Image (cartoon, rainbow, N blue to C red; front, side, top):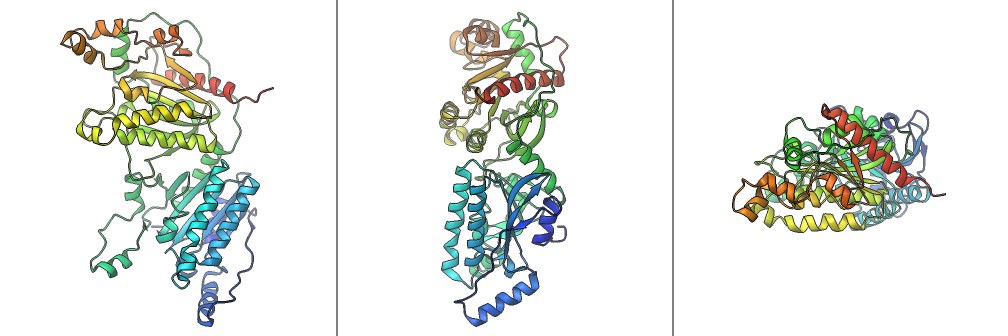
Amino acid sequence: MSARLGARDLLDLVLDAGTFQSWDQPVDHSGFAPSYVAELEAAALKAGTDESVLTGRGLVRGRPVAVVVNEFRFLAGSIGRAAAQRIVAAVRRATAEGLPLLAATASGGTRMQEGTPAFLQMVEISRALMEHRAAGLPYLAYLRHPTTGGVFASWGSLAHVTVAEPGALVGFLGPKVFEALNGEPFPPGVQTSENLAAHGVIDAVVPTEDLPLLVDRALSVLVDPPAESTLPRRFGAVTERDAWDCITQTRADGRAGVRDLLRHGATDTVRLYGTDEGERDSTVLVALTRLDGQPCVVVGQDRSRQTPEGPMGPSALREARRGMRLAEELRLPLVTVIDTPGAELSQRAEEGAMAGEIARCIATLTTLTVPTVSVLLGQGCGGGALALLPARTVVATERAWLSPLPPEGASVIVHGDVTHAADMARAQGVRAVDMHASGAVHVLVPELDDDTPAGLAVAVAAACGEVLAAATAPSI
């Protein structure tokens, strides 16, 4: 782990030079015992701050933001009443001024010297943060070493995007307290930023020196207006293609996927990992990004990560719903990308509520108020595909398809074997061109016989950008 930065050092790192303006009022220590007042005064002398948090506003690449930063050297960053009131005041001021909020934690939790009155302030901090989120304002959190107890269980766990520094101790109960209470050490490696990222509790582990770039990218999507289109549009008529040929070609290695879309058609991408509730499934990808200059949330099925050994399970759709909720709350357009051989079929999937998750994805998508675009990129098999389909505008590539089952499965149901799969595909109207003719697909992206993944990805991103620009243009 790199050397610990103090609160002011971290502010200097992230904010534009000379732009920080403190919001902090003098701390009132009246009413505390003289011995505790002396402890607070000693802590202030050691830390160089008057409390365990600093708040204020500054600029990040010219964008105004509000900041709340823990100072661990002040009584281990613990949160007493004065610190909590300072946080609440800063969050509410950020809400009133319409500012994004950046927070950096480093704390042992509630200040034990102040007991229950300080403990109860977790509720007020959480209330203020949820009012900030309800106003559609972004909240980004950076969990530093250590972040435990009431801080992790309140403002450390309520951000839209949560990352942590490498090797940080992050957990609900401090390991020393656990060992003292239980007579044995806490299992090693559990309360680390890396382990929490692996389990989908936080989004990523980010070295402190990389934090300014991450914040800049996130704010580019969350705050900055749309940019001018730069990607070339693809025009021309689609080619009449056999349904079975479309299916075999979209199943082939080298077919453009959601990663190609982000790599070649997007900028300022910030990947989000997991449900933030303890699940992570790599078969679905969630990102804040710009498609051809248009800010949006992308939720995409990653075909390259879907295998017979690792199919798209219920937790993947719970990740997808997290992305949908973020889009709605942050008032960003949502783009879903469909490319799946089908959802997981297993006892685990049944007991994990696969059918319910498909239903809840559809229900969520159909009730969002932000602009929504679905991209039928390649394979669209079964309920797992339908879960991400019902957007206001559906874009599809020329070879894409959608069916209730794999054609082989449909063949088994109708004919008792898989040998009629091609005929079933032709009979069921699975092609994107068939859906376009019926009105279920609104925009068709032509494919070239010599298309590359990059070329198709750019064409799809350009089509999405055009739809998003039209959907978000101010009405006259």
